[in-house]
Length: 358
Image (cartoon, rainbow, N blue to C red; front, side, top):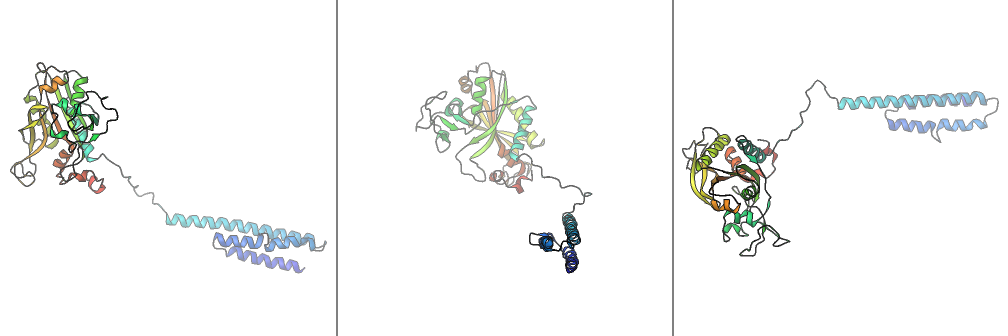
């Protein structure tokens, strides 16, 4: 019965081999050693055909018991190793559910959009509508209809982004240009929207037009090649400069504070007459004069004026019956003045350290 002794010894060796397997790799090595195609228990099972017939039942039974025992031990050991691995993983990645959760980062509107929406809220609160206009404009709407002569310097390619016109003469109001410029351009101002509005709406008109404009300026602390404006237009019977002043005084105090003073300086714009620029008292020095306001006590915020009768005539509006005023607000300028921004380029860099402050 030497084979029985071999089976007993193999059983003890199998138990020790499985018990000392400290990880899945060693347990798999033990399984292959014992139960693989060339494993020790498998080899013994193959030897049953060479055993004497009278010993075969006893040895066969004992060999099957050994195989089942090894399979059972390996199965239990594998389960123990998986549970141990899970406990170690949970220990290293444990979460204290009683702690407050991590608050997700919530985005917010860009400062330019915040200012733009605030301007819209101010004017919508006094009955204005919010309109839009095309960013790719024609020279007629951007210049001519706004009373700008054909030789006006702003029409130069040095001051305007012209676009290749693939169908010359097909636009509304085609024009002949002194230097062969295209009829199509990226708008340099939102003022062209005044013409579109008056062509499609009958007075009374109380509207603002926020939008992006483009000029071939080199970006520096005070200039950007792409920036935002909010155009305002009012056309109605009996509109006077007093209405313009009252409206813009209300806007200035709503945006910059109730204690701010305003003043109107004569200026020139082709499409308004009279024209002026609106200044507000410097918030740094309270109007006494400092380096921020260049010791004047005032800060310019926008241009405005009464709509020139020629512009009304270009739009089919009777200037003997209707009058109106217009104004243009630089959104980036309002942001810079409100928050003392030394460089307009900071608004366009996408630097989250800067933008998260607003």
